[in-house]
Image 1 (cartoon, helix red, strand yellow):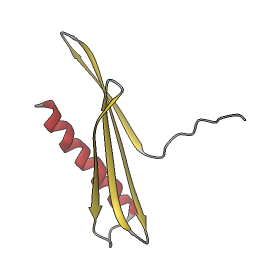
Image 2 (cartoon, one colour):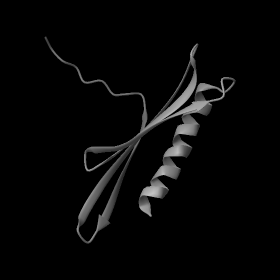
Image 3 (cartoon, rainbow, N blue to C red):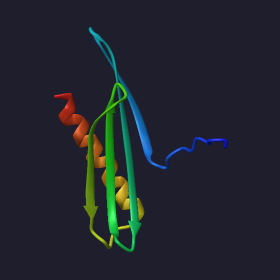
Length: 85
């Protein structure tokens, strides 16, 4: 059976931080969804191929899928600011 790789629909950002002790690759994955169960966002952050944090956020049920994705992007930016300090 042939295994096919599929790209996840989440937004992704790669950040390479060059420091004296070498590069640090940080990947941020965000996604938002809306269903009969509610509206939400999820972020996952990995550093040097190791998962370092995940978060789920519930969004007001009247919000759109686009709003949930924007919320995920906003929360991931805030989270990266915290990691940077």
